[in-house]
Length: 189
Image (cartoon, rainbow, N blue to C red; front, top):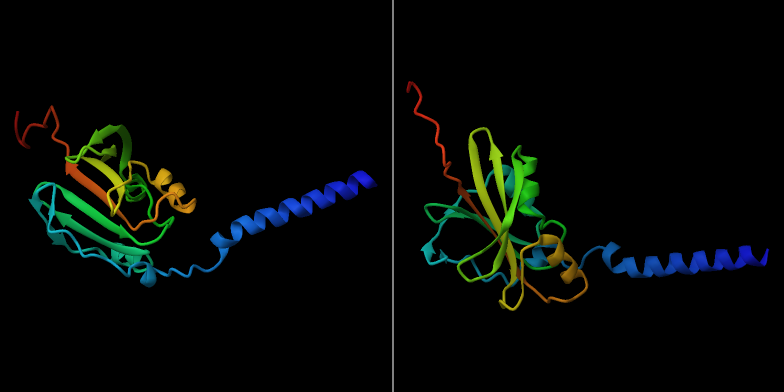
């Protein structure tokens, strides 16, 4: 009977410890999406030295952005589409771009890390659907520039454990992949 009592006590203690550790993450966030978006510095005018043109967001993107703890916008530099997300607080709503592409029907092929023009590693993949293939690369960086992540999960856990104060920028860059063997024009024999 004594062994059962000790086991029940340990179980109760362990359960209380787990609840105490999880409580900050289960409580309603004091940083709502609107609060987290405070301090937004505005969108950049250039990316990699090229002027940006803001693109309209779809209804689906607008619905997602409504509860996002920060700001989201799409841009073009004339060759690439660039999705910028300014993130004001840690969130699971910032997920890998590959999840978005997979969710809208693309087949994802992981690619090696690539360096951007600033020398930072970006996580990359090819997204293919029908006859279109895009190369998509992404990173997350502190606004101060002191920390950069090529992986959303690594960023998330660093934010949860307080290793990075934020806020952060998420950069997703998508461009068409030019096939080495283009299809002949229609009607060509």
